[in-house]
Image 1 (cartoon, helix red, strand yellow):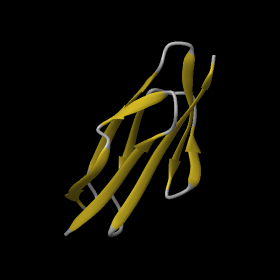
Image 2: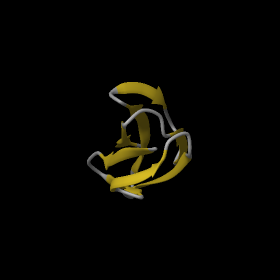
Image 3: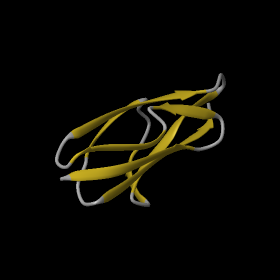
Image 4: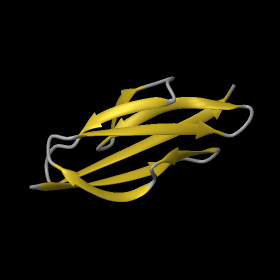
Length: 76
């Protein structure tokens, strides 16, 4: 069984990996955010819910058929 993970970054940074990936359900997906100079990670969101803030690295477990992960950035 698989889970489609949709990964997006907000303005002023990027995320690795980005886009859509398919992974086995219950597997971990490791993400790394890279803010532009003068910016920092503000918040991580999973399926639209505020989840964790302030860190460049994030791990999420692939659950369900789809999972959406977003990261936002703010000025330092």
